[in-house]
Amino acid sequence: MSGAFTKSMARNIFYGGTVFFFLLFLALSFDTHSQLPKRDHRADITPQVAEGKKLWEVNNCIGCHTLMGEGAYFAPELGNVYKRRGPDFIKAWIASQPTGTPGRRQMPNFHFTDAQLDAIVAFLKHVDSINDANWPPNDQG
Amino acid sequence: MQYKSQAVAKLYFIAAIGLFAGQILFGLTLGLQYVIGDFLFPAIPFNVARMVHTNLLIVWLLFGFMGGAYYMIPEEAETELASPKLALAMFWIFLVAGAATVLGYLLVPYATLAEMTGNNLLETMGREFLEQPLPTKLGIVVVALAFLFNITLTVLKGKKTAISIVLLIGLWGLAVFFLFSFYNPVNIVIDKFFWWWTVHLWVEGVWELILGSFLAFVLIKTTGVDREVIEKWLYVIVTLTLITGIIGTGHHYYWIGTPEYWQWWGSIFSALEPIPFFAMTVFAFTMVNRRRREHPNKAAVLWALGTGVMAFLGAGVWGFLHTLAPVNYYTHGTQITAAHGHMAFYGAYAMVVLMMISYAMPIMRGRAANSNKSQVLEMWSFWLMTVAIVFITLFLTAAGILQVWLQRVSDTPLSFMDAQEKIALFYWMREWSGVVFLIGLVIYIISFFVGGKEEKAA
Image 1: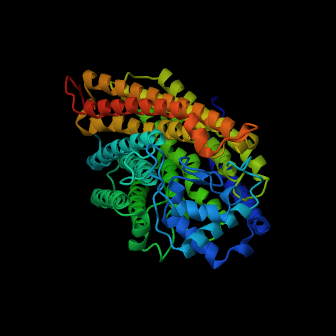
Image 2: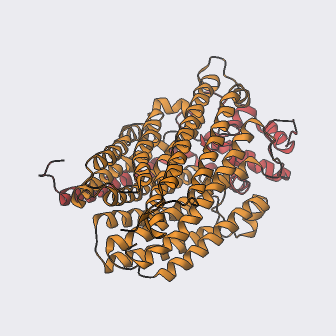
Image 3: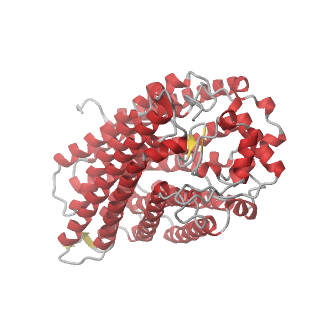
């Protein structure tokens, strides 16, 4: 680096550049939030969906599964599982865990009530309805 | 050691290494569960082991950052730490809180833990990396504030170097962006949107300032290159980091319900994110080439060069590999992501903490550098761990490419589990690489207990 470019110039570019790009990021975030209602179908977030999200969280489902591609990569993507499997299969599957097949990845049994299973399905149905730019590429997730 | 109070860093470093070892043991457990699905089930299900693995990583790096700051700031500010007692108290609080949290994960079902720890008051748990119970999250805030108070006060009463200022901005940013972990709206899209304000703005934002600052400090000390030159580089690097990394957050906003324009913003800016890492590599090599002294601590210099190279490969190259939206459409949430995560965290953050420990620990133990014998062992551990992480990354990348092909690109896509079975070979190879990593780590720990002829303190 040449002598003409001094430390204080570098410092000023650092502060100026950071502030500029952070403000740009805030502006983009603001715009995103004004567009989200069209995409996230928030009117459909019923208390049952909220309950499902809470069950999703307090059982740490994200510790094995992905949801819209985020989470752990140990078990299938569930952002589109509603379309892939349908509500009855999902409930039956969760209730029948663990499979106990030797050597196969195991999911714990969480002892959900029927109402809780319905809430989880309602949550997964809502996630499936979100406009996420056609991800994943196919039903397999 | 120029200032007595720098010695508080020692405890932080010891804890960091201990937790690092725990992280690796749980990593090996997870790797085995990938191929022997019912290994340790139901005692330690995968999600629990993963939580322990990732949380230990975060906590040991935080211990390393705090220890590094406590060591470096008095020397930079040329004054004793504002309150060594506060630093010691916070150490024990953080360690006990961390240990209690891990025990909570391991001993109690997660839902029960949530119930017991007040998750109903404020629902923050069960989101990736932010799984900590509410009291732990609050504890992190308290410890972070006390720590920031302590080092900020030290800088304010002493000399304010560019290295200190960049570190302070990084650490304050770390604390501020952690606050988003308390925000968990019921709308999953908004939840995910702000979750990244903690996760991305940490690792691809403010943490890089901490990394740059530590690297600059150790380079000044070990090469003797003029501070003006090094600090100018530092400013350029952190400028590049933030002007690419902040908007680069957009590469997480492709497929979570956010507008499509993020595919452009995210692709363009995150494609530039390797540049600051490349600058860091060039920085480290240039400074070492222009060195005006031969520092007896060769191991510390090796870690400094290593972190430059590996951060560029892991965060820069492996990040770029899947960051463009059309590519990410296929790779999102696959083993490609896992491959990138492993090398990026090791190269950028694990290695920079190990560099700080390598430089500071001998001085805190009353010598300029460890004995040749000890340094040779440490350098063996460097190569074993680094080569092992390269192979972990390569095998996971191979697994990821096959996974994408079998599950997403193929005309007859397989289900997730069918695809997983077909790529098991690569998971086995990853696990064996993990064993090599563990051997490297054991040698690393042994290197602290090897005597021999030591360089006297300067």
